[in-house]
Length: 311
Ligand code: AMP
Image 1 (cartoon, rainbow, N blue to C red):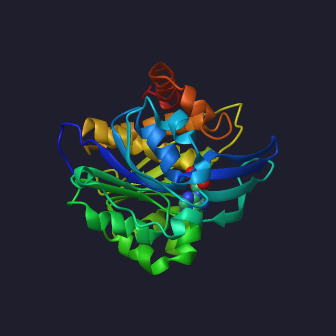
Image 2 (cartoon, helix red, strand yellow; image 1 turned 90 degrees about the vertical axis):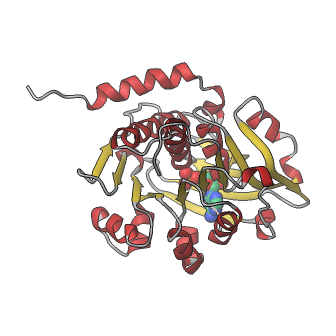
Image 3 (tube, rainbow, N blue to C red; image 1 turned 180 degrees about the vertical axis):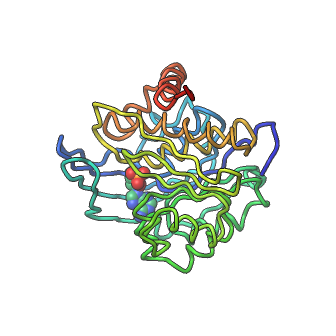
């Protein structure tokens, strides 16, 4: 897990979805979502991404408007008969709580990821939130990557715990939200939870805490690095913020090719920066209009947000 030339491209597997989202501002139906979608669009601001996923015929030509013109290779995106993965979530009034109304795996039920030959030597693999069996099937088809990062969700922690444990043994960095970290570890305290999870395999655990930011713990001198979330007046739809964070974080690491303390901290801030845009509008709407200049400007605001001198 070290070096200073780019570790690129990233091979990313996860869901590509049609989401229905209800929040205090309204409801949208069948908008594009999915863990791999948010991840890939975010990571492609930093490096090349190879997307592995499946959609149904109802996805039609939405892939073109999303992925074309970006650093995203679609040779591993299959279209098969049937319906695309569907998920519905409903948010409470402060947007901090979310209930899953349904999860319909649809075409993911029969999906067998086939990694194109050219993808097998990808130096970085991101296992987005999807059935851990699929995450394992992807890992089985690649030559040992330099870096494996993963995400998961309560749905899989509860539904496929044994396969998830197998995945974790093969992961370097787990990116997970606070509720999931507590559920996976059985520990209420997040520091203890991260410690228990590290004993399951990942040497680095990044805990996403929504509007309260991110806590990373890893084997280094200080052990912890924390970042706040960007204070935003306009938070519209937090869906996909976690996957977008992961895309910025892993994308930044892959682009610089280093796992030093400085590179890891910078990646946390890039992840937080890009996630702060994702929440400003429904679906991927804001991310699709995002520019490198926007990212650079907000990255600068992050620096000011936490800067202090010793006096
Ligand atoms: P996040 O808000 O970062 O947790 O990600 C939300 C996205 O994850 C939505 O676009 C959903 O389509 C997708 N999603 C929700 N549940 C699952 C699941 N069980 N497996 C894979 N993807 C999911």
